[in-house]
Image 1 (cartoon, rainbow, N blue to C red):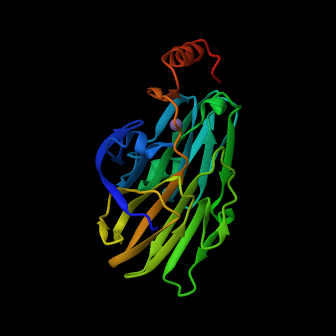
Image 2 (cartoon, helix red, strand yellow):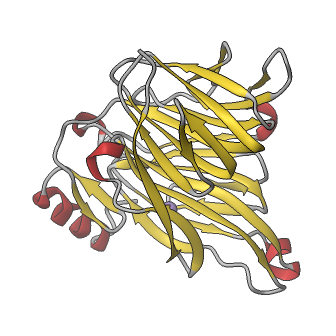
Length: 279
Ligand code: MN
């Protein structure tokens, strides 16, 4: 049976990092598992000297995934990794046992200003993998597969998982689906998926509907279980993310940038960070 939308989560705008604005779906909780957070950064136009990022901060116990559409970022971390993220690029960072990193606008963007638009999602790790060694997958846009439907009215960038027969190149700890979809007005798309995975759609342009229920710009639709779902773009077309993965049926202990299973593990993470052992 085709999946339907079981609930629609609206977004609100909050300040993150050094004070940049993000659109964030409200109170997603366990229904969103294995995802912990979905932030749409911007779109925002910064003037010269205005661009803001997230200076040095730690993470432990999950993954942060950054996907930029416009603007840029440079990142650096305690393990000595550093690099740029440019439009279309994805950085899939598995924090595991811990990293301290910064995510900042590149000098040119800071000096001259410019438009920034992108996403950061947080993917939880199962208890057995929370203390794995940190891992980076910095994938430039040119290496991320995309595909167009035969009729040319659906475009899909396959960041994780599979769409229109094309498979992602990024390796995930648990099977994750992360697809960026762009649909022409009235275009239809069918997505086959694992029956039990939690699947959700985040619309960030235009609107679309699933089995007759409409999903407006800036809203997250949670889907029922099933082997596939069909979506149809509205009159103005649609742009969305398809996110999915197995729900993790484990307790969540969360404190700022640390996401573990118990309060003791959070205390340990804070102590490790304060003792300089997290890096
Ligand atoms: Mn971070």
